[in-house]
Length: 67
Image (cartoon, rainbow, N blue to C red; front, side):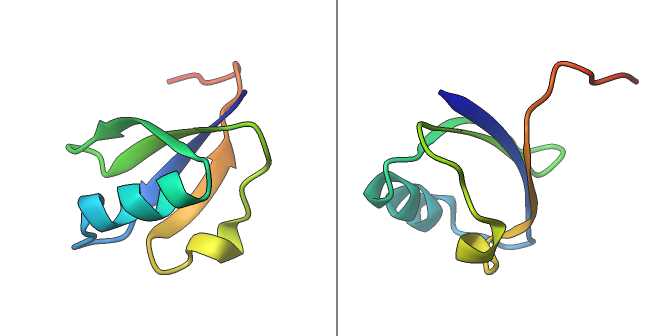
């Protein structure tokens, strides 16, 4: 399973997004409302171009996150 972090655009309908993701076999694992980020899980790679109307960017989660 590949995990992705995606930055949401403003005023996105989460229910509509969740239905679209489900139809593409992508799981919405978490929604961090305060920072406008969602965590996605998929067995296949996710293309940023497929979701341009919903996300500013999509990145594969890595273990090198530092603050």
